[in-house]
Image (cartoon, rainbow, N blue to C red; front, side, top):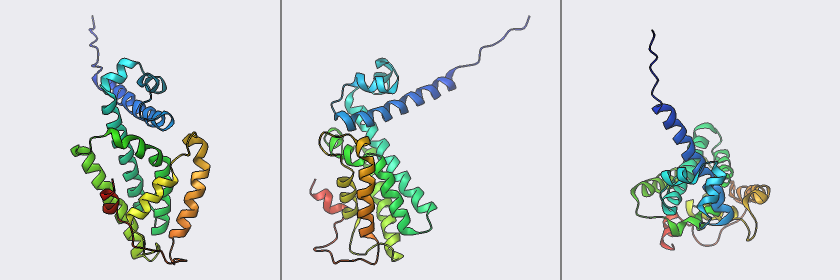
Length: 214
């Protein structure tokens, strides 16, 4: 008689758990945009297609979920910047591609919603934000060195405009504004391309400037 030994289900279960976690984070990101940071966690579980127990097993509380949504968005934005620099021969096209991709991450809607719910001193979050600063500054510096991006702006100017332009209007959700946001970003980006068509008042705003005002 042949004895069949059951194969361990560990790897499959781990893969399932990883997919569930990713679905929860994605659903939470969209729910936070639409409802705000206080959206019922039951609604997030419903959107993710998982049970409440699965959500709480992965994220014991709201703050933990918001933390991981924030990390996920920052990681996605970093990956967009790195891909744009690696794949675009034209340095300004890399800036344009990054700006449009970052808008799809809902940064304009999420930044003001989540800022009050995160631990700014968390080492993982601090490291991710530092890497984001570095990669965006390098993206812009490359375009400026190539003479493709006007020289009188800095990463703070770029980040502030990108955040403001991708923030939904009161009472409207992101999906309804996607086409409008893309149009506004195109207008903004045309104004960044060198040679500049005007002289800007004041000095370039850096990311450090923005941090001092937070």
